Image (cartoon, rainbow, N blue to C red; front, side):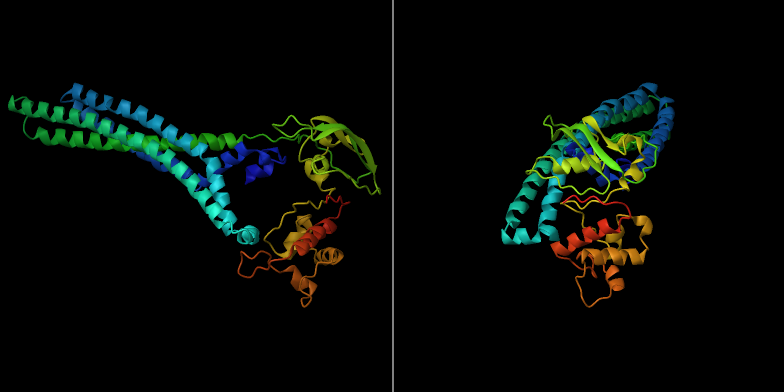
Length: 409
């Protein structure tokens, strides 16, 4: 969450690979860091036992001790390879896992409930969910089968070596080279070595899986933002805003969403930007709010490049009502105050903003009580608003913002 706070541009959040990476990291974040400690400690413990018993066994026959230790190497290498394949399978399946999650939410989430029932689309999403599940299940089973075959081969080799060691020791006792009591020492040493070899290989392969996860996690933490944030000038009042020969193409796209846009707006002016669907109206607002930086040209605030201004203070100059505005499952108060959280407890300003937008879904409640209503039916005391009332909440956010407002509708 803290890393996401650093990523102020939108490009990462409109990239499928980024979401796949987040899916892997988020789905395992509760237990992989713990595994690093658990399996790391277990591998160290097993290693100490194997070395100790190996030293004891080598006092009787160094060759047998060496053979037992060498038998670890093939299984270890293959186990790590299989574990890497398993991790890559999981990463490759992360996109499918997100599709499964979406299919599940489409059936269960209230946002889709009307269309799902109107079009009787239950079977469509359930079937899609099951098809993706079995695809992932098949890939995972292939990896598990490889792991099982490797384990069987390794156990067979280790068993042959252990039988050979016991046979050699029995013959040595018969020849009078060792006392009978030494047999107990040998069998105990071989048993401990065999047990800890299997344990170490299993735990080290799981530790390797955890290290692969941690590598992906740290790569995520290195994710760079897609907009420039070096500006240090605190933004003041808006006197004029200018687009200077601005062109822009979205990441991984060659098509220009905006091409050589050039205009200027002064304080006090009211303008309407009109165009067909897909003509770049929303893209223009995204550039103005610095969710993206232009591919060519530049934006100016009061005659200075917008990149020179501190990003937080620059964005504080604007308020916007987006077409796909967010519906926070919070109280009415927190929804309205979202545009200026520093004044979250300014009840007079909250009531003024609410009145200005005409938000009054329940005529029987006072405005102070209305502010404390929990929104969202997913909570026991939650209230669901109509589309129009939600839009009024968004207008209230705009009006609550102290700065000059920009409407994007």
